[in-house]
Image 1 (tube, one colour):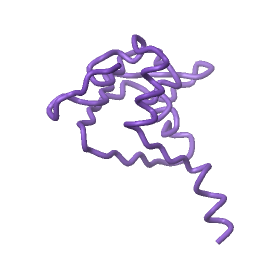
Image 2 (spheres, one colour; image 1 turned 120 degrees about the vertical axis):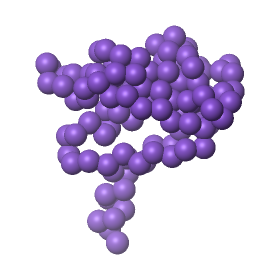
Image 3 (spheres, one colour; image 1 turned 60 degrees about the vertical axis):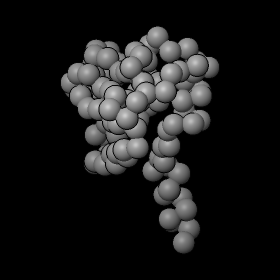
Length: 106
């Protein structure tokens, strides 16, 4: 079970996170903090790394370099049960794959 963070500590923190696929960088040295109660909107052109960033934040991918902290703990050290609990209770991700078919139908 993860401890609750206080309002001043980041819930999600990226520290110089980089990831590449087949030697092609998807993200380079991304750094940000997200405090409890804040929302973040991630936008960008196709293939700019939006989905990669969200998958890293959810623990579905691991970074090649840098650190990702969830409530002060490195994501690599959080077991899958705790990650499932975080995804279910603290994260909401809407993917464009879910939106586009509904928009096209209306």
